[in-house]
Length: 373
Image 1: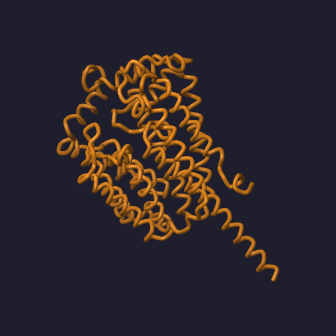
Image 2: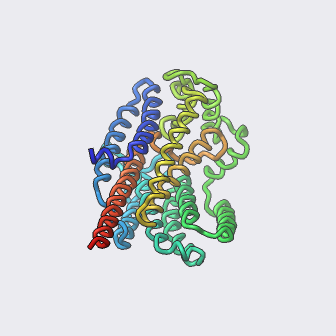
Image 3: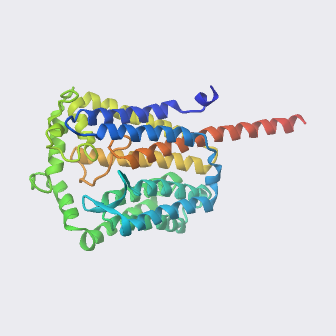
């Protein structure tokens, strides 16, 4: 019973409901697709990992050496991609291990949250000092460059936005934020001129002029908006989404899982999905606000920011509001690495909440004992 009381079932249940929505969409594809079966395995592993990590006291993560070692390990993983990584859709972002594929960017996102949470946990009062923004930005920039060179621009953008989110949560002054926006705009201009590949420029130009090349660079975005729009109010019904079932919509199990879902479930189903995401983010934020130290607070809020950024960019590109960047939808898109890592983050947050409360209770009991003696 104690184990049941110490688990945030609302947070876990919300994540599982979103994952089940993705599973139902994959199952409705029909044919010889094994996406749903494989995803069910990853989901099961993710839930098992959640409970395993929930039983660990993560006080050791407050040590600088431990967090830096995890960050260095994730960077090493990204570097190894250039040596032994496998290419997928033009990006060298995967390790093929037999029948499985591991995407190190998910570990990199987790490690960046950890290292930023640790860095700002003792420097939140000094956040106005620009040197802290520079140092924390260096942690982000190294990962950003490695992802950009794969090339995986979508994941690189996620890393950059994640850093901005954590810095804002840590309390950066608004004048510093304006400076960061200016520097970001200058960097984007330089990337456009000197770094962006032709296909990356084509995606951005297609976003600005979506109907200019429907049969070429704009095909994915066009078919996605068609799928979302054709769902109407109540959707076409499970298994009746023509865009995905008839293979008009590419990557309908990963990048465009939201479009597949919206086509079959319609506006009503989409609003329910948004509500479930809202509950998940609310629980993460609440767990963060109740953190025993600044480190736990920043980690939980950083995890919430990561999921929110992923969701906004993925849904934005599905409805034609943002360029197509190959970003997954949290807990819903097909893929083992991001599913397992996402549930791992929830498990760590749940453990921090459980052991943090236990530590506070022990502290109160010790103080009570001293006052009586």
